[in-house]
Image (tube, rainbow, N blue to C red):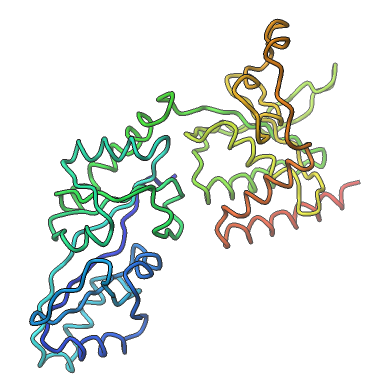
Length: 358
C-alpha cells in the first residue's frame, strides 16, 4: 500500500535564444509543449517539466506559464542536452525548481493541510504560485484522497498545495516514517480498522475469488492484507462449509469496503459469482449497511427492542440487486484501465470454471 510518491521534476532554462532552444527540445522524442495545468495533469514521477524564458523579456504570470513536458528521467534528459552538439553555441542557464511530493490522506484533508502547514512552517499556494516562488531548496507537497500509484490530475488534489522550505529528499525521508501517523491522527476515530473477509464459493474457486479481491485492493490502495487462512463456517447445523478467510487492515470506512465487496459479488449480467462476508470486531456487516441513505443508527448490529422501536432502520434506497449494480459501476469507475481488464479476465476464468462444475 503506497502513501507517498514523488511528482514531476521542474527545470527552468534561461537563454537569449529561447525560441531556438524550445524548437530543439520539441524535436527530441517524448516531448510536447503544453499549458501548465495540462502539463501537471499528464506528468508523472519520471517526467520533467521544462520552462524556458529569455531573461531580457518580462516573466509571464504564474497562470500563463507554458511548459515542455519530457517523458524521460531527468538524468537521461540532461545528459542528452549536454551531449547535443547543436546546443553548444547557446548560452543556457539551468536552475532546478522545487521538488514535488504527493501524500495520500484520509479523514479531513483541510485539517491535515493546516497541521502540515504549521508543522513545516509551510505556505499555502496554488501549484502555479509555488512554481513561481519556490526554489530548489523547497518542496511542493500536494494532498490527495486518491491512490497515489495511479495517474493523478490537478482535480485529484484535495485543496491547494503547500510550499515547504525543505529539500525534497529530506521531506520524503521524514514523510516515509510519519505518513501512517499523519493518516491515523487525521481519522475521525484516530484508528485503522481490522476487518475479516470470508469467501464462500460452492464451486470451490475460493482462491480465484481471492485474486479478484487482491486485484481491486492493490489498485485502489484500500488497505493491507495481514493474514489469510482456510477455515470452516457452520452455515447449517452439523454441516461445516469450507471458507477462505482474509484479515484486512484499512483506514477506509467499513461501508466503503462493504460496497467494494458487493461490487465483486456479481458480474455485469447481474449473476452472483460468490458470497463475501465482512466482519468488524466479530460482528457481521449486513449488506444493507452499504446502501445509500443508511445512517449510523442502523450500524449498531443487534439492537435492543427499545432501540428498534424508537430508532427504526431507515428505508433502504435500493434492493440488493440494484445495490450490486450501483456498487459494481462505482468500482469499475474507480479502477485503473489495467486493473479493470485484469479483473474482467479473472471473472471470465471464474465463470468458465463455475460452468464446468457439476
